[in-house]
Image 1 (cartoon, rainbow, N blue to C red):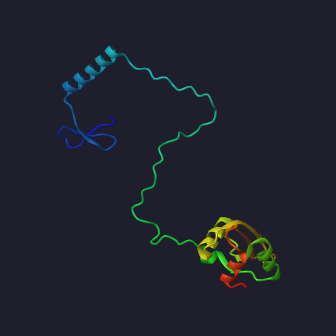
Image 2 (cartoon, one colour):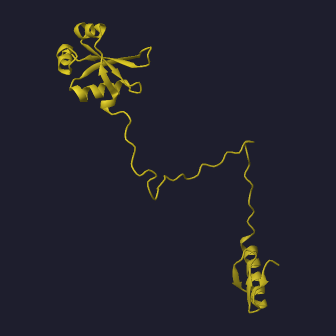
Length: 167
């Protein structure tokens, strides 16, 4: 028997550690009788086993709660490594760059290698107040990224270049 008398006072400890009151002999017989009568009246429920259609077991998808941390894991959120001052390093002033300014309404910049075309376009707009029509980029053999910024028709590259200080 998994139930044993704890202190001789009518209480017993179950196998799982819980203590419960022991029923008197007549009470336990009555409890057994009522359980049997319930089974006879209601019938014993027969459980059916689930038919498996696949040999593979897939773990059921259960509830996945979103994290609710008690404290932030970082004391200060990290700042973006590329702000618009770090994206554009400097404008290029070579002869071919000057030709681009005069002929194609395009200004040539050396930019950070991690900068994307939208970032370059955005930083040109922030720093020089000009709207870029298109940005083409290439990585030079020395490892630096060159950006050709084609200006919109309402901006003249010569005026912008003189304002920046290239010419």
